[in-house]
Structures are given as C-alpha cells and as structure tokens.
Image: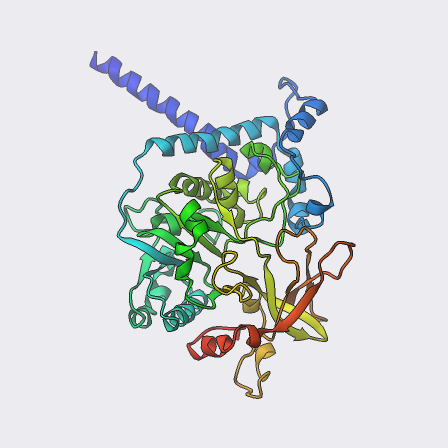
Length: 454
C-alpha cells in the first residue's frame, strides 16, 4: 500500500511539472516568441476565421484618429511578431494570464498596512539615486510629509546604501531591497536581461502603503502632490493614470489576447501612478504578471507603462485618466524647440490647472550638462527649462501629434509637437517656464537636483 501511494504521488508531481512547464515556461522561451509554422497535422484556421476573431475586438480603433498617433517605431519592430502569433500560442497565453488571475483571487489579500499613504520610487544605481534624493529634498521643501520608500535590486544595495545618511536627514525615507524574503513579489535575481522589467509593479505591491503615489526617479513634482489622494476622482475610483503621446494600433494582438475592445484612447505614461492597493490588488498582480513575462507582453505593449492600463481593462476594473494632454518642457536649440521633459497636469479642475504637476525629465538626462550651462549668465548654473509647449485645446482632442528628432549632427534627442496638418488640429503655443513655475528650477538645482549628464 505504501509503495503504491508513493508511486501515485510521484506520478502526480511529474504530471504537474509537465503541465506547469507547458503553460508557463514554454510560452516565454525566446524560440517561442515567433511561433513556427503549423505542422501538416495541425488544423489551420482560415483567413476568414482570423478576420472574424480580430474584428471582434476592433471597436473604434480604425481611422486617422488612432493611426496618426501610433508609435511606428514600436509597431515596425514588432509587427512581424504580431502577424506570426498562432492561434495555439494565443490560446496558451490567454490561459496563462486567466489562470494566474484565478489563482490570485483564491489567495487572501492584505487588509492591514503599516502606513496609509506614501510615495514609492525605484532607484539603485548612482545616477538614479542622486536624482531621487534631489527630488525628495524638493518634496520636503514643499512641506510634503508623506513617508517615502526607495526600492532597489539586490546587486544595487552597495550603491544605494551610500546615500543612507542623506536620506536619514530627509525624514521618514526608507531604502527597501526587492530581494528581501517574505515580500509578496520578491525579486532576487536578474532574469534574461540586465534590467528587471517587473520592478515597477513589484515595488508598488511590496510597499507598506495602502495608497501609493509611484514616481520614476527622473520625475519631479512641482509642488506637494499629497492632494491627489483627496481628489474626488481618486476617492471614487482609487486609480489615477496619466496619458502618453501614443495610441495602440488596431492590428496589435493585445486586444485579442486580453479579449478587450480596441478603443480610441491614449496609452498610459506611467512615470506617475496613484493607486489604492486595497481596491485594486488583483489588477496590480496582473500588471506584475505582464511585466514579469515581458518577453511576450512588451512586444505587444510598448514597455511596462501600459501593463497597468491594460491589466485594469482586462479585469474591467475602473480607473480615471487625467484628461489634460501631456505638455513639453525644454528650450530652443539651433532655432528649433527642443522638448526634453514631459509635463503632466493635476486632476482636472483641482489645484493649479495651468501649472504642470510633474516634470518627467526622461530625455533631459540623455543630454549633456554643457547644453544647459550658462543660459542665465552664470556659466556654472544649469537652466534646462526655458519654455513650455502645449496645445490650446488640450482636453479630449484627437488632433494632437508629437514628433521626435535629433539636433543637427549631434546625438541630442528632442521632442516637439508636429506642425498643423489637419483642418481641425488645435494650434500649439509656447510660454515661459519660469513664469508658469516661478523659482522651480532654481530650487531644484539648489537642493541638489540633477540635470544633464556630465
């Protein structure tokens, strides 16, 4: 009897391992990212079958309103992969995320939190830590008293801990290691690539806060953002997302994979996220899942940014998207506007509606510091922000179009709004950065903020 039971148990374990490998491991292996042609013994769906399946999710995605704002670099790089995804692969991926969600829903969810509200950063190397410390100093100068966590990878611990004394002086700031045992989403090793793509969702999930304001290390608030937690939209919904420049192409297989309708709407810029983990625990887990299996999902979505929006949509979870369209902060170079920072605005109708709330300097950090020096008469003083450029009609407007270019014979990358090409297109305009945000950049650099690279 004992031997028979032992054999049965071993057999069950072997079967379980085979099923797990088939469902979770095989789909993410590199050789399966572009599925091979079906064998002769495998039934091949007709072209009509494919069209019917895809049209079921097209919604209102077809047309110029979406097409003109598709990120063609991402589409051109991944279109072949989209087109070669077989029905077998799609069914396998569908089963994977649905089964993951089903299992997560059976687990107990957190009901208590060490702190109610807080800010979460992800940083770790010398550059990201310096930028984060400068931003935290600025936040404290705004009298923002929210507790703060900075999450880093295990291999970044040595660099991160060199900032311990500076962080202690800022009050209620903790360094957190993503590899710590017992975290809901511990990350203890590098997988496949040098960068951990699942860090952002993991940091939010692992944080000790129920209500989280997540910020990228190069994202700089212009005032105390605590009011976001008290906004009507957040209290009602519990998730605030901000728009990106792009829209998702109708041909993208993400809609079929998640079984959601393609709609004419902006993608998400996730340099800032506000979320109530108690209300949105399961969507956060699905976002983490999509980031973890980035070999599949990042070839559909443009990086980790849209895993949040699409996880919410897949589960029919509500979120509020800020309606004010993203602006640009920058300066004139070679007679042309060079935008290097994305400007995001507050919840509509709240606080200072004409002032950006976040200056996301995602291109500024890739520009030499020398470009920004001497612009104020002080050769040692950086002045990266001269102008703000935005659309006059910047809400619920489909005729908005960014463009990216390189300055002359340099490697300096800039962004701008395209010249008017459509009859109904809203005109863009520029205004003085310092008039809109008086003393912001003076304070930022006085407190140790980082501009261009050395």
